[in-house]
Amino acid sequence: MTWKKYEMSAAKWAELRAKIETTGTDPEGETYATWDLAKVVAVVELGKLCKAWGVDAEGKPVCTDLSTKQSIDILWADAPVAGFASYVVNVAPGSEAHQFAGMTWE
Image (cartoon, rainbow, N blue to C red; front, side, top):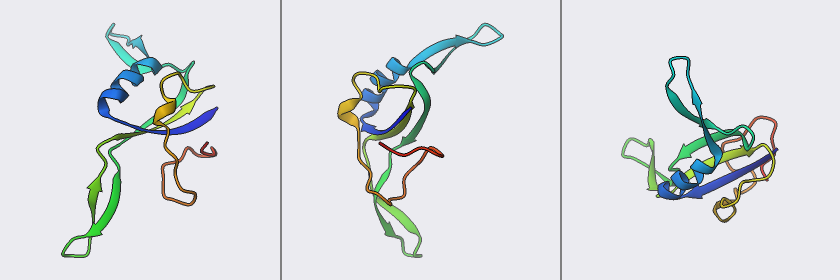
């Protein structure tokens, strides 16, 4: 398994997401999208992350710089699928970031 963090536009995520999804059918015959488990073990869509924090008049933390890009963590079953490599982001050691329990970020 390989764990990677990505950041990309919503449009690019929609395009790349299709490469790691498949469809299933529920007991009522309805079709739904699901992750292709031959490619991914888990996907966490973190959304737009705050890049800088400040405080409001009451001293409560507020985001002062919201990213325009979507953040996604993917735990790959094997190697990452083609197309994702240029969207990998590096996280500073010791920073507060989403983690998959028991996994080391690569």
